[in-house]
Length: 291
View 1 (tube, rainbow, N blue to C red):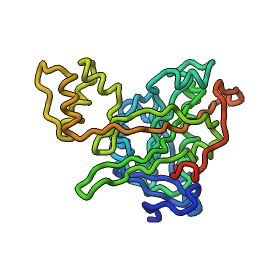
View 2: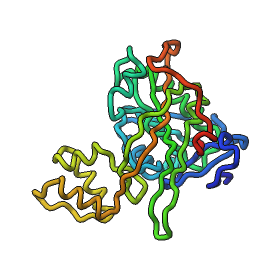
View 3: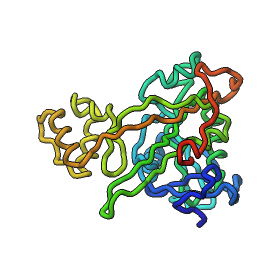
View 4: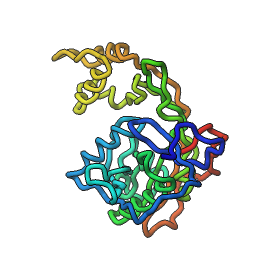
């Protein structure tokens, strides 16, 4: 295994990998990726739960976003039960403007989507992600998708352990998106995030579901109970319980400097111009981490 936890000095010469929400690095110079051994396929409805479990187990966020299409990287040389070695998902961003501000003529959520998860296991040789993304984009284009927005989070993530804080994600600036020639659109606006002790984010929309008693609040509540909060009593107002639960689990609010944003047309209309302005690519020495 040539994956390792600390990156070399040349941060642009490594690929990021994951296993059990812990990151590692593979040098791009190692080669070894054989496209003939792998294939990318769209995960049918009956297998989406498999992709969902894979992402939750290995991606640093530990969460599954709003997904329209899920694509699995399959190792054809592995037994069926371990053949899924990577997942890429296209889905719905938190706000429609994420798409419409970039692809003004495309129908959001249908012709334009967000690349909201990309995770490969640490056993996969370097340079696989570029190939896998190209395959997934071809499959998505065949489904009518014409534009994709992607974000890279340059802010490190930590989780609390018995031995102190542990870095589970060092941040990245989008090397793979640059390698695919996606346009760089700058950074999203700074914001404040509610961080849980396991290193995941408790999003504002999730908290709103609990406060307002909306559909989907049960999953949020179970997540907090698993981290140490008491179960909410039947009929207990969600707002008060949520504040108590946040304190009980040790949630903290942190400043986030914004994500790097990329976009590209895919399929037969790749020559169109983006609505948004493009900028020079950010580099590793500007942000202190690599993708």
